[in-house]
Image (cartoon, rainbow, N blue to C red):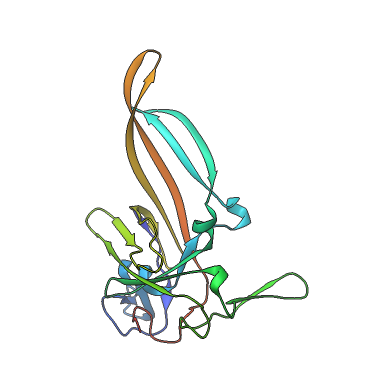
Length: 209
């Protein structure tokens, strides 16, 4: 398992950050812990052009791949933004509900990311849920349980985790007949969540308001 870590400027909470000290005892700031990576910035599905805005599904029989195919995220998945907090609560909202967008477009079609605070002055509707994760087996689950907009949960096992991206897979099994034989096949969904490079909140990361 590979974990990617990002430097952070204020080592306030040892559950979220650890000192980065080299072999000579020199301090280079702090590194995010795995929990710190989860709660550092809001998450959304990776719709960037270099990823074609799609995710991959593989069907496997034993050690043999039956097929691998790319699928497009649903409109709801593409519109979803999620902010996780240290106390295992989360907030979620839809991009269409931004009153003030966290991203501006320049005259030459570039983008400027400035972030916005997570409150109703910037986002029309904000919903609440909860989440869990396990250091033991890398399993996580995001639960969107607000009665005002309940969504199917997101769960799986993260393969790579950093402050700006998390790739994960969800494995399921199903029976199918191949060449007249009933076989149990494994289906792997591979998806990527990535974060904007600027916090969308003006309080300490990991703290829910």
